[in-house]
Length: 241
Image (cartoon, rainbow, N blue to C red; front, top):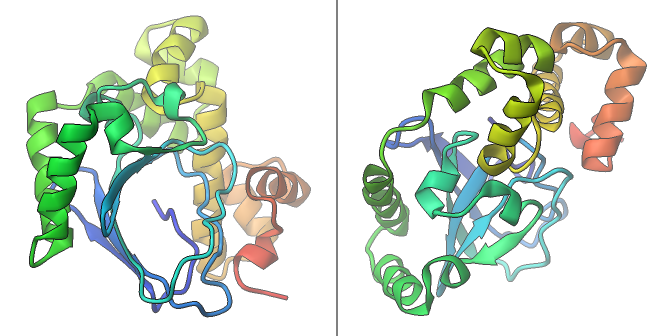
């Protein structure tokens, strides 16, 4: 899932060796568009920049990063939806729409030790990925129930249909979703639908066809959801006038 809409020359990502995760890097350029928003995608990230480790919680709206010095480098591990809370040891809803220092979650001593390790590594990207893999191994395998929630909603199934397929009622599904994803299944479904639409539109599909294929009622519905979740028009997000 794409999480960043910044300058393609400054941002790179690849699949992680940690199942379902993505490793990404971004270097601040100071160029116009360098502060483009990070869009909701149902994910949480562990991030490093020199001297600092922090966590990006699940977003319900676009996050616009503050100005950074040109050349500042960021590395992140983006976890598959629903998997980060076990890794971090904190419910997702406690981090919703927040950026939190790792020291606030794991303690100052542990965070400083890990930050120093990544700071001093010849390859901070590899060091951060290795840290994530070690911690994830201690957390155990992902919950298959949560993985199925994501698969079902991302396939366009309704919340009620997803609950029925999993053999639970919608109230229980909401209770399970909140600590795992940071919000209920209805919001998760909207966020995943947004990401489907963006992927289709970026590939050049007309907006009306994008709306139909992504699961919106019509193009107007697509436009409203994009505006509500990102604060921008679809054309604006895609780099148009």
